[in-house]
Image 1 (cartoon, rainbow, N blue to C red):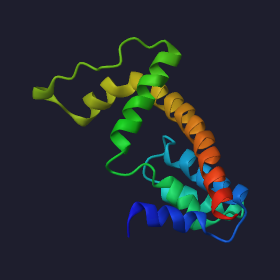
Image 2: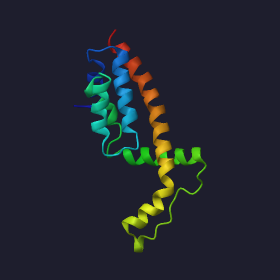
Image 3: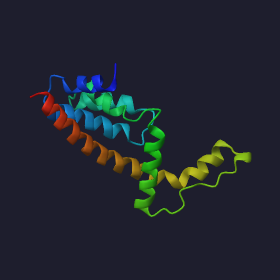
Image 4: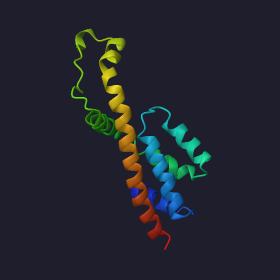
Length: 142
């Protein structure tokens, strides 16, 4: 099934354009959050709590997937670093003597930029996706 067919499937769900767009936007926000590894579970919980369509919410969550997560998280960390005034964002890692604890210690200064950046980019992306999906769903329901 092609992407276009899946997209049409989301838009044709028997729900209001607002609810379809809201479900997708909530999924996008969760998918871009720093809570890597529990996005799907959080999407299902959020859909259940807010009585949103689970399929549409999970489709939004899966905006981040193995092919998109590295560029999204890299860009988000960069944005978070710029917002927080962090100038050194590339850690100096001695790859010949690498240990997990040493790597975590080197990456520690990027934790707050990562959190701030993913939350900010997630918020902006969810707002933009709401607008796009709302307009598309409204057109599809006419």
